[in-house]
Length: 413
Ligand code: UDP
Image (cartoon, rainbow, N blue to C red; front, side, top):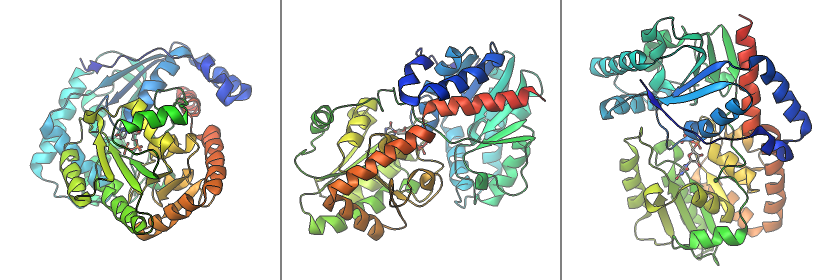
């Protein structure tokens, strides 16, 4: 049996004051005919990264509106996660060498996890490449409708890896991507849904904190709250470009010697490269003690991430590839304009000049940060627009609605 993840209860009703009556009614109307439907989500990890963030909120809300929803994680050892991490990089465009050994490992775990998947479901949702082969090895029982959800930017994948995965993907009944341009080549699904990730406004990471509370928390990590602070919260990963953020910080530091930078990252259990890149980030920062490099093992959990985002003068997400960038959503929701890389899902969220700025390189990043640091009133107005943009489009309730719409569509098949 796959490992079951327990989630807390949540009530949709608690979101009414945030999203308003009409959105609430729409969700309840969509959920009514689906009452009792059995839903299974499978992904690779319960900690770290955007997918697990979403499932902690989405699964309980699906239950609250009457669906019988479960979340299980697949079984994997380092050998498997090394392969899937290289696939993840390749799907985002990195050239890798796809060895016979890697294929064998991917297939072996695909079969093993398919055999461990028990039960009968109306909707089985497989998240990301780690799960891709399970449908193939499981055969046609166990799920009426099989859905593969891709959370990464696959607009320019390394073709060898895409071609290897495509036969596993096209046997799903539906595919979900964040953006249409992520569906590469001639891959087709009977049903294609475009759904963006979202955040839970009531989670400890996004619940309102006063500035005073946030400042108290980040002081514990050595931040001087009387001096300006730039923050990027991300896994330690080349695509998140923590080195570029450090370069941008250095450029501003020349004009503003009191500036501090916090690079906050978590170590996901399916991300073996994380530690290597963490070391590189530390080396790049060198002897500058105004650069604070922190991760979950230092005690930076959800409440602390909330505090860093809320207390930052400017939030940066200088990714060079990004599926969506939930950290961007989190910061915008806290009324912070975000300086974001002009890639993947970031431009959906950062509307240049309105909810933040889009940048292509460290120099541009430094210029925009410096501008916002010098113009706090402008920054505040942008932050308000940012929060409304998230309220309209990127809260977990919207996600629930979109899944219910997809289930309704598939039920008609
Ligand atoms: N995250 C976290 N602690 C960290 C770094 C990241 O809790 O130190 C969370 C972050 O708040 C966000 C998720 O991990 O909710 C990252 O999602 P995103 O879509 O930004 O990137 P991914 O890691 O999925 O590529």
